[in-house]
Image (tube, rainbow, N blue to C red; front, side):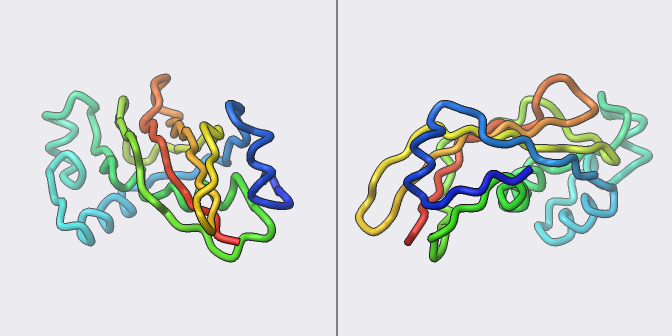
Length: 152
């Protein structure tokens, strides 16, 4: 369920708290193959099903870490809507780790927590702690600190 806030300032009420858990989305081999083609990352562990089944410790192909990371914007659109924001700028990432693989044809979802908020001239900068989970592993498949700037 999407959290709807009346203003960027409302984020201050959620510092240190989880604000949303998104719906599960599938990660298919077709998506992985398309991502590999777009990024020119054709490593066998992502696209060669037979070799992955034979040589990979996972027994199947896995999604690129950057594919998982690239879904942050999609997950954020499910998690949070802030009224009164003219635009939101992806300011970057402070820290990203991929503790577990995303197996082809598994599902992932994201958990969002507000780490901190600070005023920047003309914007409000929010840092979110994001944990992306997979239904194929108990460990998260991605943990990140994501910096966004909300411009009013």
